[in-house]
Length: 338
Ligand code: ATP
Ligand code: LTN
Image: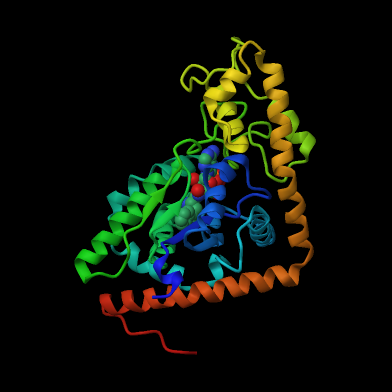
């Protein structure tokens, strides 16, 4: 057994639906992507096929896929160790999606809460948006994935992936690894800075509620300083009654590595001004290098495309093996070479 074979397999994906990832993406998921490379055999995917489930501009999508890949490299995804690729370059995702769609109950798909939330915001809801979690299951199962690092909002989709893997294995014999969600409790849901009862989100947060990784450092400072808190002026963690301050404490702790109770001690009797100023500096200092490195990756388009092609080739080698197994199991003919 080679070293790579003995390591757990990790897969995750992110949609290229904005010009910049945000602090919630970073602390909830992407930091774990980077950390897990140390101990796992990782496949990381910019899921552009998921991004067309809502209306989109083709040029903007193409550019955002590239910016997304550049940000992932800037954050520390290492293309020498992990496969970093664009979903549409690996056709096996769409092909397995069909098979899994035929294993998914209509009622089962109808229970997905993200579909309900997202369709309510669309003028026109597509079948693609409805079957989105099935494509997500295909993404994951193609790589015989053990762990999927995501934020809390993806837990239900991960349950569906697990159910589909187990059901398929039951019906046709062992084909897929049953994946587990990898969700860090502390940072599972980073909240919107202006409406701290909601999650920070690129599609539903207002401009001051969502802190983007590619924001100018001064913009980041402003967003932290204008974050909604409460009238108590006491830096204390209480997610229910002090949602705004608690969210800032979570961010502070995650970026500094200092435990929340230590931060409470440090700011006891100091009020929110010092706390927010220090956090604003910490955020700007921690994230500024990411923006710089992203620009460098974007400056060398040929090199970025070369890395992505290499990633897609590595992904296809694994994905095509799993797809061939699934084809055989359901009684399909194998694809012919062109
Ligand atoms: P959208 O608003 O379009 O749904 P999003 O901002 O929620 O987008 P996604 O692209 O759906 O971001 O998420 C990418 C990854 O980041 C996922 O693993 C998701 O769980 C995680 N994530 C997104 N928002 C947060 C958040 N506020 N806190 C923690 N994790 C998050
Ligand atoms: N649904 C996810 C994005 C996504 C994903 C995946 C995450 C698509 N395929 C596979 C983990 C594994 C989202 O909206 N954040």
